[in-house]
Image (cartoon, rainbow, N blue to C red; front, side, top):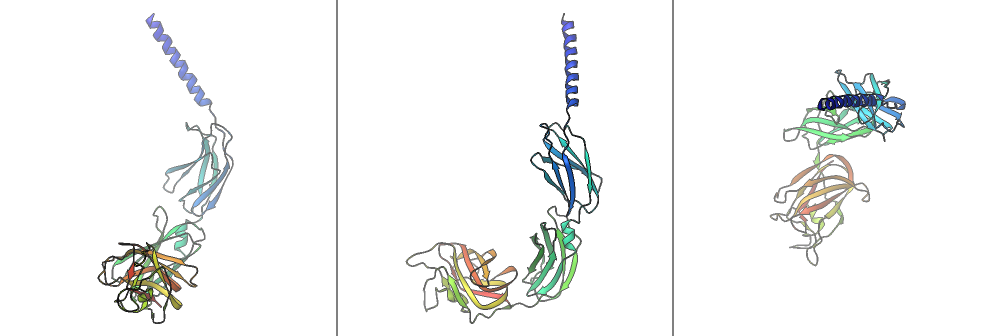
Length: 356
């Protein structure tokens, strides 16, 4: 009797296996409808109608890379516009199928396209560079509108090798490197994408133009958050002390009768539009209770302001601290905003501006 039970169990399991296999084989997935592809910059752009089949969970796109490696991407049922990127400028054959969660796939639909040149290679061919005040200016075209990285190798004013990186998706891009010595050197420029792929390099031999410290004899204070008259003489504590040419005088935010918290600011009117490349700041002599972080803003009209950068400030360094603005800006007004500090108040001895 026991032997008969074992035989019957084996037969039942075999029948179950056959039925299960037949059930799996009977599953069919509806293919995506109206599949189309067009060439983008380093990418293929797909559209399709997702199957109405309830079993379909995603659309799968298969292709081979340049080295013959099989690649694929999956797109969920909510996506009807899909992009396969990081492609080269050559013809690709794509196999498009719908699939369920068990990887049962529909009939294959094959489409072909030849992507346009990838953005990082496209932009690399358009880079130009010219000398500018204390540095160089680079320009390029990026008709793809995709984000790329402009990279420049150069030697700074301290004879140290540097790599400048500027990320942009601008159609007509421009950026500047400042704070360089006015001596001839070779600049190496190349373009990268998000994967770190790198274009071939372009080389420019250029001599940066000489930047100078701007004359501030007729400058005035345009605006300030608060100030305090302290110490000897009518200048100490007032914002105008920052442009009087004397590092022994200083601007000090209010501390008597009230002590406003950060941020604190003052703005300078340079009277005419200047090309500005960097600022130099001096803290109050022998007092380390000042700011530790600040920002620089610039304006042509004193109404609309452009953020030019945020910087750390060493409140124990009593020499002039130089801060390159990462570019060359046409400005009439400059605003210094103290963002953080050791105490609630802020002080600053002097502001010098470099450019032309």
